[in-house]
Length: 297
Ligand code: GUN
Image (cartoon, rainbow, N blue to C red; front, side):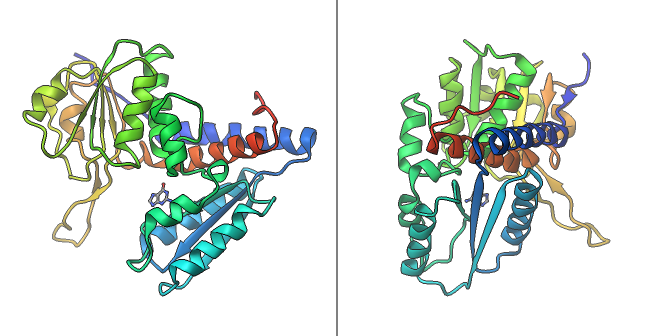
């Protein structure tokens, strides 16, 4: 049996970002509209810093306006809510992203609930979560949106009747991922830490999405032959003797690629798609707020 196709998330994301840049160009020319994305970072978490820097760079490269708000780690909830209110009413801001996690003194849910749902490009507001759960259009969380695009790129637009297993039940990835697969008429199972006989569940899956944050938890002999395997995990292995630590996903990639039909690597799979989808969501939000169709490019 041939080895799996390795899904090139970097190339896929670059293509999507180019398409977004074309849409932005059309919106500027035809509608005098420049989509704007505001990113809020509270504190100095190093991983978040890198992520926010990349977001700003790619937003600008796509021709959009980028607004960056950096607040100190001791920011109060009230101060953050006041900033969000200001962004809600700023006509130049079409998308708002408050980087998570937030410091302990701030109630994350209260902040997410304050974001205008039409500007909620993370898709984390209960309004958008509810729209997705009921099969209606709305803003969809970026990581699952990127995953479903890659799945369709492998299997075609028609996923009807496929067996899909999502391992992980977070609000950010697992639950919206399952909702998207259900919307595509897959038979969807959600597995989690209490699931009995996870291996057997996985072996039935034509589509396997793993988002648990446990290095190489999914073994090669759990994979159905020819399955599409999407690995959302990003784990750092313990450093070797030279002090070098490697990144790896939630799937044992080397073993799984002998069996799968297609598989995302870590890094270079799902990761790059997340920011590209954020840019796409910002264009979608800007168009919806201005009663304009998203340009076909
Ligand atoms: N922290 C890590 N990933 C994300 C994301 O996609 N959105 C937000 N808001 N915070 C994050």
